[in-house]
Image (cartoon, rainbow, N blue to C red; front, side, top):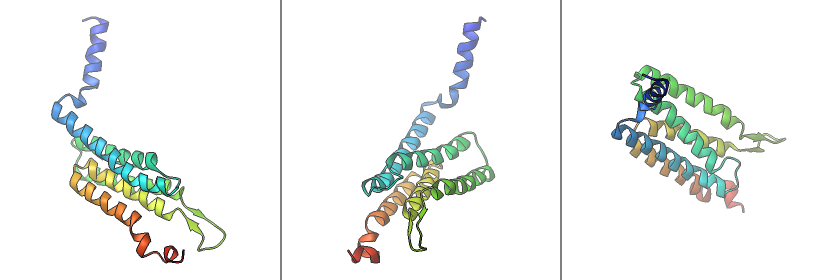
Length: 161
């Protein structure tokens, strides 16, 4: 076997993780759904002029899905998945902390809702990565509802305007 054949065989082996049509379809569906659901959350933040918008939420959601999906595809046990999910939950906190700004007074804090939205995007991504698509869609709809509806009838600041 020549060098070119060995290189081609190696490339084929390296890219064989999606060799089966079912696995390719499942992976593409989950990653695409994570992007769409993350984008749905990010759209609300984008139109309200917040720093973390569509792309940030999409990337957080698809990144969390990918961490879980890759392990699941490799047959990782529940203990490994649990540790990765714990790591995602902790790690996203650093990104969220960067969106929170504190002013001079204790009541002058901005970015908490955006941080909570990013945290939710990570959780939704994990849910998609685990193959719980219907749960992820329901969670996204509920999160968008909270972001879009609750301020209009519960937030004391909005009734003062």
